[in-house]
Length: 529
Ligand SMILES: Cc1cc2nc3c(=O)[nH]c(=O)nc-3n(C[C@H](O)[C@H](O)[C@H](O)COP(=O)(O)OP(=O)(O)OC[C@H]3O[C@@H](n4cnc5c(N)ncnc54)[C@H](O)[C@@H]3O)c2cc1C
Image (cartoon, rainbow, N blue to C red; front, side, top):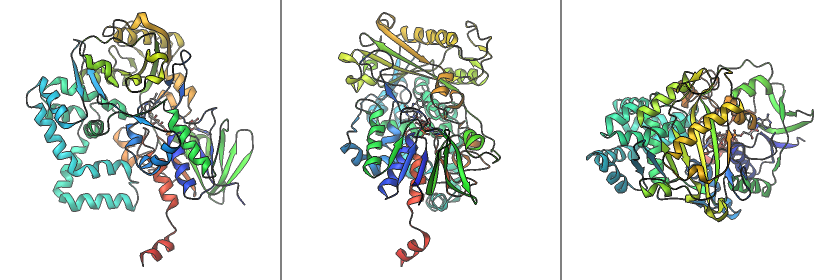
């Protein structure tokens, strides 16, 4: 008798969704997490001052709420205390001249907003929606399907039947366009370009990357339709509810359990060995939420690792404030969940390029998150709390594009981390005059801190692997070994490094759970009769 049906290595969102689906399906599951808390890149903590509850890493849940796991588990999680809050003001871009552009929650509002800057851009928005919606199932289907499988083939055939050969060629060509080409070919106003271009950073790409135009459209539509939901009380509420669901279905979750090796017997995974030498056995599957670096370099010693690249590094800055930030300019900024500070499309492009050349960007795209706009419970008396994200940073630092900071060391020292954060704080303070006087405490996490906090955030890459086209979609995690099966039978790889990539959608965990829960072939054939 094995100890469990399935052992899940790591407790990120993909692990928890996978374990919850399997446990509900009658499997005896065990989740093993090496750190002291469950949730991986979802952690809520009083990081700065008592009563200030910060989402330390991820914060925004549109991918979870729009995903297949939520559709299946949402009701059972709500019963276990998970409640989503949403907003009519999901995002805006604030330009250096103090003007702002907003993306709102319905087509009419967005068309009117875009027309403010260039008459005709509103109509361009409506045309985009009219061409996107009829094939939205294909666009979202690419992200929710195991592509190297009969389901992937089925999706391809569905597209071919609907669009025809020429139509499919055109659709695929459109998917490959860059964000720059799509934005500048669609909207006249540079304000419209700057409103949407920063969102490609949240997909791990830059505005000049292949397929970033497609990702820009998917995100723009998803935000209009889905808003920017967050759980009341912080992201950890999602983790707590999933853990409760797993336990209620007989599963176990253990922290402080570092898996060192997958035990392989006669070519099949039969369990895991922990760092303290203990072995646990699994009857039906071992599911590892790890990067290829760890899978092949540690858990499967002896297997040749496929080539795999990491993407840009990231920094988080958390502020506890004694009062709400007072934004200058458009009063809607104070109600907006995510405000991007950037000069626009070229600004994002320049900062990405600088980071990719090893430089600290002179004028980074600053993601200013304001969870209190939806959930005042996260700070005492609803005072002030900011979640800041910087997605354009190098791991090995060759210099400072602004020529100001000492980068001779080439690594993320504490001194460099704080001085770079000062630059970003100054950028925000230029639009929020009460920022500096209201800071109670600031906590900064450099790329090195991110890596130390979660082994999957290798080199501080928040997305656990470059999302360049040759390592994305059909080719994730790598062209030599795409999908979730591994060279070892009964060993599956999930997590941000695998298709459909990073984010809180739990796509890979859901795909693998569904695959494992499929009835055996004979039973399926019998059912068809
Ligand atoms: C700073 C930051 C902000 C982000 N913001 C957002 C956001 O707002 N919205 C969004 O949708 N996405 C966001 N993302 C992306 C998203 O959070 C991640 O892609 C997602 O959470 C990754 O989930 P995962 O299942 O791949 O595993 P992870 O969350 O990476 O968790 C993996 C877990 O496995 C554990 N583990 C690894 N190896 C072992 C081992 N050998 N033994 C035991 N345990 C092990 C690790 O300790 C870790 O806890 C953000 C990411 C970061 C880093």
